[in-house]
Length: 97
Image 1: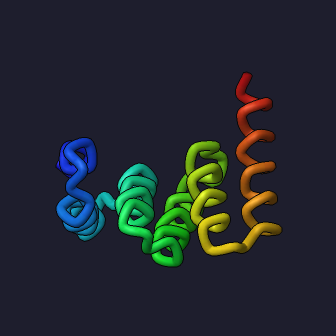
Image 2: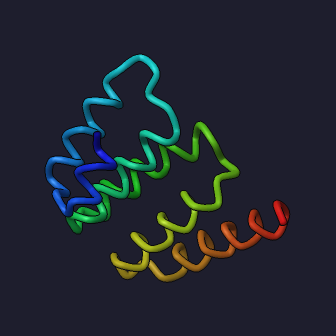
């Protein structure tokens, strides 16, 4: 449901749907990742980073999560951390390819 709201540009509704999914006992890395994307879409980058970190705690080798975390870090002007996260995403992609 959150993905559908996000596709329609309804970021607030997407955030609520992702939060509801996270309250389920099966809160998984993809739910945390999508929650982070919804928060980033609302320019709530600090909270988005927290969500990405939750996702990475469950799936530390997910390049997409590292890349989106890098974008939120960049939006907050945390360039050194952003570059490190982007480098990790590239490293994971190279290992996968």
